[in-house]
Length: 577
Image 1 (cartoon, rainbow, N blue to C red):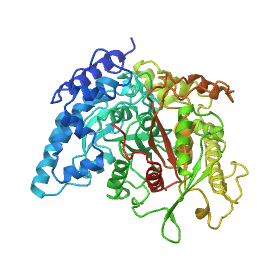
Image 2: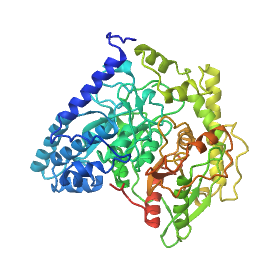
Image 3: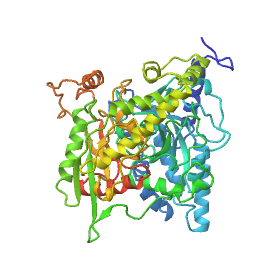
Image 4: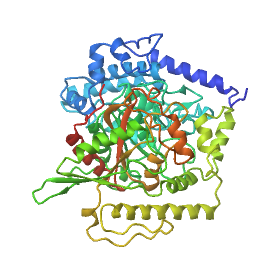
């Protein structure tokens, strides 16, 4: 048995961490119920069988309504916290989504907030009493900070991450920490400390990753608002797989100082931090509560850009809002499964009949080249830091770690000139994609190639003529079977471009009506792999979700259009409990 620095084998360390988690769940009052011996594949209905009506009512209330009820003292923070922490404990027993619960410190914080509002007659801030769950690798002072690596168990965060300090000042209560995958570089969530996190709608499927613990917890309504991170789809994949709202902001809108991970100094592809929420309004509250505090004053890496509340949409002469939606249903490399195509078609059919929304077909642009560039830039050291951390404890490589590092043909230790060349290619692709965006549905010229960083010609009135947002899949299917999330391009392309992307539930689920296209001929090896994954029985009950993508730093311009689309199509503004 391989040993770590303290002499314990990795299995012993994992067992100790799991015992600690069990102890924190056992400390919850009211007691977290035991789960039935036999469980259905879809466990989202189990809480209704085991929890009180009061707990169910509170935990199925969206963030914005809780804000109102807490501010008017119709609910106390203590009531809300007890409800969510009990449901979070049950969720973790069912889908393995938490690394630990924090009942003592959460209830102490809740009592402070209750005493404050009772005395001051006003809330502490815009998130007064709102429970927020936190992905484990985001540092919390005095708590373990291992980022899914056994060798890092025992590393203690010296302080809270900046984003936690800002949310705390806004009134939030932190009560649950959630699972992430080994290396943080999976679109699934499994590590050797806590095992495999599964999807609440179908436990044979993945909840996504790397913020899959957050996704599964919110999917079980053990949280209403959570914090994730994203470098290739890690907020959007869990949001989509669990029927949630999730925003990948543009880089440097929100602070990420204080989190843990490998390659922290790598600036080739910038990771971001952002919200997962059971409601769209929760996303807006999260963003506005942080940006209203002007975090760029304490973190100079951030863009000094407040959250815009004034409408960003175009208007006609009568002041009526207008929206132009580009539909990118297929990236030309891997065709989405039938449920995803049904989800897109169900929306665009309704949008085409709306007088204020124009729908434009938006062709893909060299998605395979986008993946080549970003996959080459992810591990500029050839994955040596990940390998060293894994070897230090002797823990085995998880299947998805093998896929993204060992089986990735683009992973190599880059020389400085090679890194510079890939950076030029990255910037050239960004310039070419902007030109491509401007050309769709207009008479503006398209890109010649992506080898130059020079932008296209100056275009007069481009913003008035081009599409406002893109409607596209979050992946080539709904939540994949475990250890099968091998195609990242539907999310990672937007990380390469640094475009904001907002995931939303369509309210639809996979069902027997989504039959396999028996006549389809796969385009390539990746497409064949994805095609062979699909069977309607495998994906039963998996939520069908999509994403809106906007231009860089137009984060508000994915939120407002989604509100308009939701109203036009009749989609839910919140996840159905």
